[in-house]
Length: 91
Image (cartoon, rainbow, N blue to C red; front, side, top):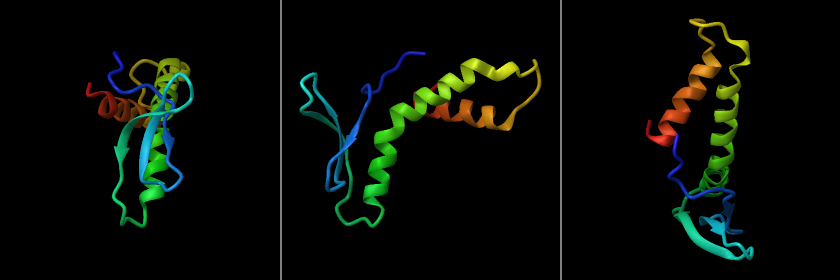
């Protein structure tokens, strides 16, 4: 699986208007996305978007470990994790 997104970690501006990455010196680099200025849920959306790289990595780790899931047995949480990974990576 090839990662095509901007690598994390991602950060939220103090006003919650944007999610951005930092350069190697710790300064704000490219903006990942901007959020509408008149949204009551803007700050919560920004935090969720900023957590996306970490969430994807956690799901990939859980799925890779498989936790002894027998062949052919379905574990709903792992199925949901696989679906989320596919959605995030375009697979």
